[in-house]
Image 1 (cartoon, rainbow, N blue to C red):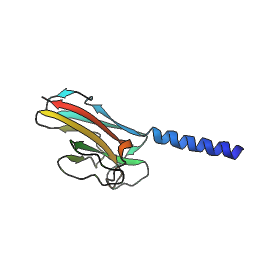
Image 2 (cartoon, rainbow, N blue to C red):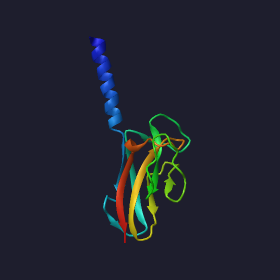
Image 3 (spheres, helix red, strand yellow):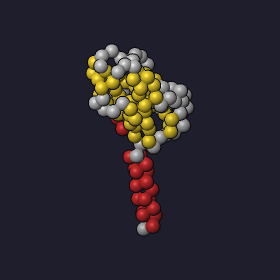
Image 4 (spheres, rainbow, N blue to C red):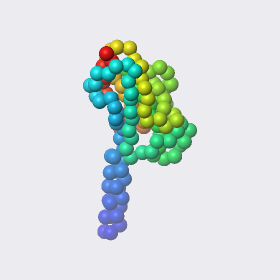
Length: 129
């Protein structure tokens, strides 16, 4: 019985730790109207930021997607004008966009730029005036 309780406790602890892994935009706020260029700040909870190439478990770095489709778990995040990599471990940047409304998506990925999927992604909408 003690083994069963211990196993259940360990499983619950693992699920709780995983459930606490998330990413968020510190700024701008969802729905914000901004002037270009504007600052974008990223946050991660339950994982550690490491530069590209570092494959330590529970680590990775941010990617900013601009009006781009989500990146499936395990797929490599492309590197182009709509998929911006922060492989040095940066947690903020300045973004310059023409006036309009944009969907910004933050995607956390491992050291090989492989997406952690929707659980480690966050979308906001901003309007550039």
